[in-house]
Image (cartoon, rainbow, N blue to C red; front, side, top):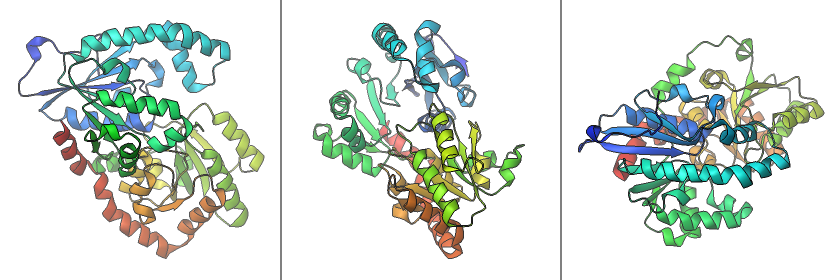
Length: 404
């Protein structure tokens, strides 16, 4: 991976045949959006028609666990990298900040970061043909930059409106500065069209996609941890309850153990600032001996491959990557029917089972039925094998090229 202070191309390397694309990301962590971005960078960087760069607003140092997965011919730069300006941004990811620290960071350091980002981004964007705001956090900087701008939105508009109405209305107005707005599910597009009618004509639906062969290669890598050889239910999520809902999953697993004889343990793959609270909940429920917190794994695919069942519980999503990966890998899946994504990925419940958000008994029942009913398993897997083609790069890359 090539790091540079300016992340740009000199005039001598400009080409009339290549499209120069700059991806923007506010922070580079270990979440679904970051993994989706890596997949796109990998696919586009292998194509001779594109010159690709990635600008990350705030440097996260050791938290940038996927940095090594960025293709070496993608130029990478950080707009803000000074330790004084990034320290509390990093700390906020792993734990809750004291109020006085939060106020110091927001009132004093945030304006400095914004000024640096604005200045550097204006200088940088002029060197590219297309700027793709991949987590849709840069609209205030891009409005007056005269290049083609594409927003990439990853979450449910309706859910955001219900919980953060003023913020969502402001985003709706700022989205007008983009030439196109990519959404990653049909439901998201319908929400956007209803909430922001002035954006008509800007919407473009492109599903997040996966390389089936690459997933299979990564899934075949041996794992030294003996836990992988035991029967288990697997959840892969950031341990942050503002968006995810592992609380409901733990309650559902508790019911599953109480009401049925199941041998499967529950493995949680991921990290986040709510891990301590979730561990305490597992202990209070008396399931701490059967719930394993595995932490972060840069290659989760062997764990997906060996799992008896993939369980996903969230309050809202955009298009959850782990469900797409599990679908492509031919796994049994149970997910909460949150806005948006799970219903489309699981084809209205035919390629995996859907349960209401926050309903632990329903989630426990769905997990038991899918673990214990061979006929249901075969029906679900048969349908999933057909439906997965919608989420392969052979389908979605053509949409992306048409957009450019």
